[in-house]
Image (cartoon, rainbow, N blue to C red; front, side):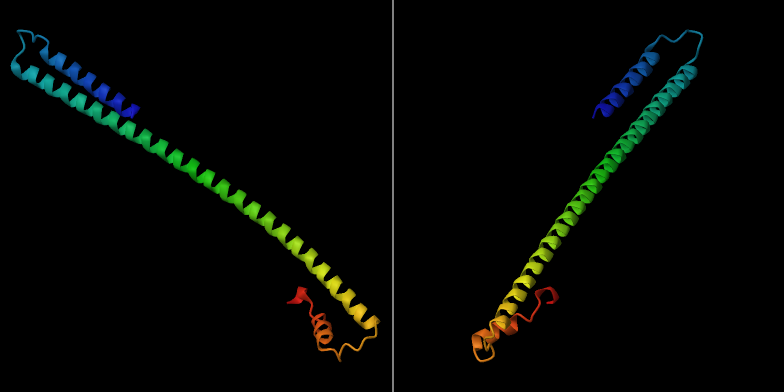
Length: 143
């Protein structure tokens, strides 16, 4: 908004300058055509300067907006990279924990299987023991 205020002030100053030039006393030896031509030239100059200033301000605002957009995109990209790194780290931790638990389950299964076989109990005759013994054959790491 500051740039627009500056533009407005500059245009009004140029307009006052042109008005003052028009109101200055015209020497007696010049005719009306010269003074009208001078007024028209001054008016064109003021309009051209205002237009040029508007174009410069518009260009500056466009560059500033583009810069802000690039900053926002860079910040968003950094945030996404940080989130991906965090998710990757959490995934690795989860996989490590899962592998640890699978090893423990496999170890417990092997111990129970060893106890059943070592006790020389006829596990095939007892349906519950048979179910447990056959269930120990399944390895959760491969399911």
